[in-house]
Each structure stands twice: as structure tokens, then as C-alpha cells.
Image 1 (cartoon, rainbow, N blue to C red):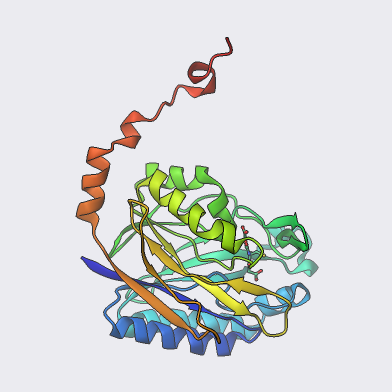
Image 2: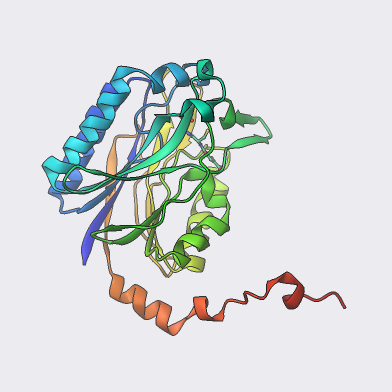
Length: 288
Ligand SMILES: O=C(O)CNC(=O)[C@H](CS)NC(=O)CCC(=O)C(=O)O
């Protein structure tokens, strides 16, 4: 049994200050015994949309990544962290747009970069008073990252809005995932109604552990407020750890022991992957 930690924090527009907060959380969670530590989406910075290009390409943002690699090594822990990654020129189409990928970076306990997943679903929505177009600043990734071995099992990375789409999570399970991570910055308009049920649904249907780190509270210099409620859901769909909502929100973490024997037992006795009908909608639901 290995301990995992999900974290909750409030990133601002300064990558170096956010690095201090993230390193402090890594140290605290490692001291509590966590071997795998999950930091939220966009831990490096959250800013108004007009500053995303500048901040993505600035030197401090490269220093942010170096500090995460160093903290993983020094604390002997595996780290998952959400960052803005410069998009390749051909992807950005026009270099002057300086768009980014919304990336989950995976770092092993030696401080090596062992994988990057780039968010594939853009949060382009209008819900009542909320209007956000992530694709103005961000280029969607084009592929899933096959699960990466970690001390808590094979980890399949996805990000935030991706949680609304069951298909990539199911595909990661087929590729061998035992744990799926959703570093997030859910908005307060949708969080109360959708955050927990979506995470639990993904856990139940994939029979994977879900690690959902979260941004929380008002982001300085923006009009954005994040929902928080970072949580760990086990492969049966139970919420086994959750960060609080006591205000003012301070950076915090919640831990759970990840039991892969139980996961194997669940999959053996409820063998969804053997029972799934793969013969397509025409065979399953013929039009009478
Ligand atoms: O913009 C950044 O710097 C970091 N990225 C985010 O905060 C992203 C894109 S705007 N947020 C979400 O996907 C929220 C999804 C959500 O709230 C829902 O699905 O309801």
C-alpha cells in the first residue's frame, strides 16, 4: 500500500511565487509519507487571458519546471503538475500568437521528466453568465499518453474539462491504466453540480483510482474563481480523501492509501472489460 496526495492551491500570475507554494506542498506531503503527489492544472500560473502568451514563454516559467524536477528528486517522490507549455511553431500556426499547450508533466522520483500529456478538449463554453474560450490561448493536444508506471500503479493522465468525455478515460483503462489523474481548475459555475459526479462516474466505469488535484478560490489579477474540492476517488467510486473549503483557502493536501489488490479483486469480480459489447450501436440497438 502506497500513499498518494492530491493538492489544492491558488495560483497567481507569478511563476516563481507559485513554485514556492508548490515546493512547500511537495515537501509537506512527502513528509507525511506520500510517494506520489498531484498538483493542479496551471500550477505554474493563472492569469488573465491576454497574459498567457507572455507568461508561457517567460524565463520564470522555465525556472518553474526546473524547480518541480528538483523538488521531486530532493523529496524522492513522483510528481504530476499542470503547466503551460510553449506550443511548437507549426502547432501555434502563427508564432506571434505565442499559444501554449495545457500540459500535465509527470516527474519520477529521480527528477526525470517521464511524460507529458497535452489537454485534448478545449474549454470553449457559454453557460449563462460564464463565457470562456480556452482555444484563444491554447492549442489542443492530439494524442493520449499511454499509462506511465508509478509507485501507485500505471497512471493515465488527463486534464480538467477532459473529465466530461468518458472515451479517453475508457481508452486509458484499455491501455492498462490503474490510476487516472485530472489536475483541474473547475469554475464555480459548474463545480457544485458536476465536479464530484463526473469524477466518480469516471472511477466507476473505468475501475481506476482517480486523482483530482484542484485550483481553489479567487485568482489574483483575474476575475476567475476556482471550485477546489481536490479529491481522491477509489476504483469503486468512493471519495476516500478530499481537501476542505474553509476560507480563506490555504494551500493544502489530502492523502489516501492506494490498494491495487482491491482493484484487481474488483475487476475480477465485476469484469466490465470482458462484458463490454464491442459490436457497435447497429448490433446493439437495431432499428426495429
Ligand atoms: O486557463 C488556464 O490557465 C488553465 N486552464 C483552465 O483553467 C481550464 C481552461 S480555461 N479550465 C477548465 O478546463 C475548467 C473546466 C470546467 O470548469 C468545467 O468543465 O466545467
